[in-house]
Length: 136
Image (cartoon, rainbow, N blue to C red; front, side):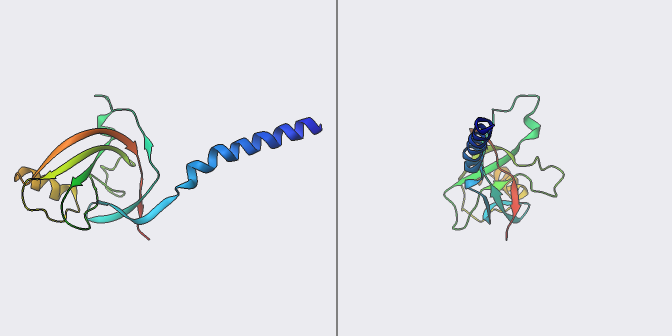
């Protein structure tokens, strides 16, 4: 009986050691990403495999700016409440300014800048899970 209790205690300790690091970073309720003209916080980050032709639509674009204006955060293609939001599964892109940088807070604004030739966008090859949270 004593061995069984010790074994259970050991297994419980292993579970704590395995689970606690996953929550160590914790949620970030500070502005971290713009999406749909709103600043969002985020929670964690887990790498995902590259999307296939069959599931690419289940990822949203997350656009990181190279240079630009002060206060620029990455811009997400969609956010919670938007029917197109995929729960924080991201394909990462770099955005490089060709024209005069300005603050970008939505994917629609970014698309207009790309159509005008003010930015170039390139996929980085990074795919990850990072859900958006309200800023508090």
